[in-house]
Image 1 (tube, helix red, strand yellow):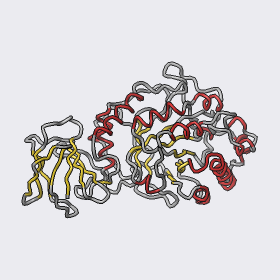
Image 2 (cartoon, one colour):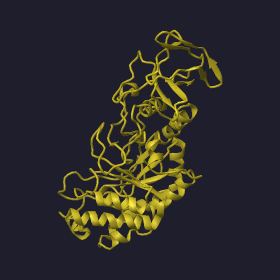
Image 3 (cartoon, one colour):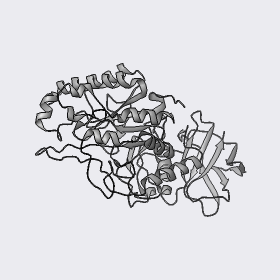
Image 4 (cartoon, helix red, strand yellow):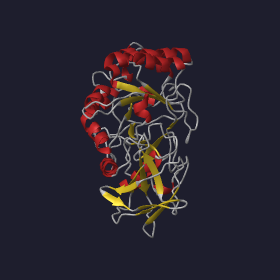
Length: 407
């Protein structure tokens, strides 16, 4: 199975999986030292080397989890803490920092093989300005020590090596830390003209498109733990919310699939959401299990996504518009999505009207509707002076009653 990638594909993607799987570097005196993925919830040791972390990774199991979620893309760490590469790299070895890349095991190849079975594109995460958790000796070997130009040259060599090694199977890069210089982003696009570039500026609900980025990114939109997702704001940037820790360190699933599904629907319906939708964030332990309940939650959420119309292949509703930063108030019926050509509008009724009659205003874009459907059941649709009324179906799963309006 092969899917089309490129900027248009990602702009219209609705659901992704964002995973940190890391081997740590502890840099004495460097401030915040990021930890790493641990063996399991009962064994909080990190790997003994980058090679061990890479060797333990199971690409098929991970790809199955992404598929069960219904992810249309995956963002995965090629390196994170300490810029430790989870694959053999001649570029890194040439610096003399042979301990900062895997010896033989190759997580990227495992990912490409596993995800390829489902046609799920792979985007690689890199922290291009990472000096705070790398010891000075290694920074000097890598040429990074207080030398931004040398760091950018290193990144360009590394990116060329990645494309030489894996070809255009790498759909793009997700750069943290406000991104690299433009020349590095240009290098990505020279290696793969269809590649996409994400740049995180570290801003929650970011409204500004970084000049070198294809998409607006809000990496940290917070955990959903303990929250009714109806009360959480939504946004048109790429939204990453955690349903586990950034890397598996002993947490547990923070909520249930109903809560995640309703937030997913609200996010993809936001006006201007052409920035890859929502990428739920979690990852496996070194033993390839997941934090408590997280793997099951991925499957349950995917089941909900597949059970409802109006998710994949849709764009934000233009007839009934969901504004950025909106909340779902109790007196609001829900949100809408529609087909790209606007011929079908999907009403996601998240709060069922008490009297069983959905009252709609006139369509904001002037559409006039002919019929209303719930699955194969035709519903009563009536034109009123102020808009329309739709008789709700008796069936209601309490999660999302999806009504199709046709023009």
